[in-house]
Length: 336
Image (cartoon, rainbow, N blue to C red; front, side, top):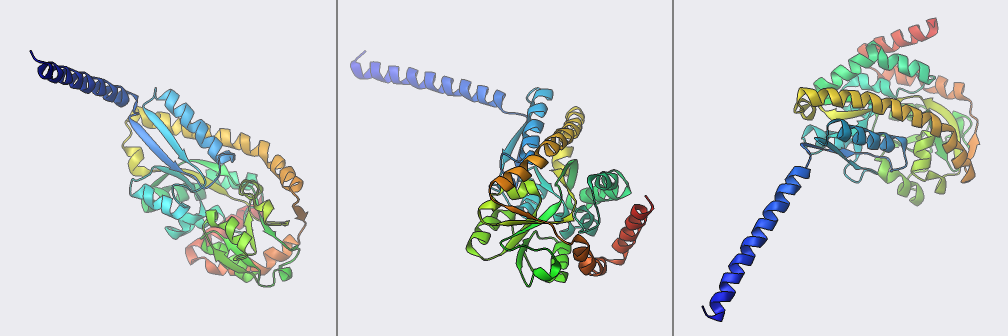
């Protein structure tokens, strides 16, 4: 056999060995791939309790399913903003996210997740979540948005941040405030005399920095997590909303899981909820201290004046059916 023939024979053997090696790699890769890969879009950064709770959720899911389920996390709205994420879940492009009163854009009863000046503390909140109101929200979530609630996370009271102190509604004087895309928020701040501007959370920092907006409202953890201390001086303690957010999964995606994995999934959701609650309680005081250390000044406000000025506008913005629920909740609250 001449040199050319030997080279051809060697090349053929080398090619066969390379193909065999690639095949083995492919088999190994397929073995390493989980049966269910769940992509999760989050609006918070990695140091927020919601992200940490989902990271824990992913760990216990992978362990309990023996690697059959894996969760991928995409923080800081890098995968999608909240409304877009909900649509992507419905289209089965991604699988999970967090959401709350934004769902009002699909069904009205979700407005009670964050209705201003309705819930005063976390005890009331848990009572609503575990009662008929919470059941109605979760049922409509599945029917009208194709989302399944896996857990609820506490947000903490929402407060107004600004670069001038706000103690009374009269101090707002047309202040341009960023709000989430939630009708009740627009109604509330308009009634208080401000100029509410719906905007995605990921756009808030740069908009405050440029002066496109002058203020925003969020819980302590979100204010700290987003770095708003760099562009805002005051935390005005309005506490206008005590609310919660749901960790959700697409119902179609959930139904694709076999029964054994569904059971593991739902239990892991409950464990994630308990884990997040512990993190929230540990961090709530800590983040306030961090905000003060970063130079933010906390301002006490006339909360009753805020509530009184916008209460009628909030009530009138509800449909007759939602007004009935509102009246019932208020009556139960007054009786307790």
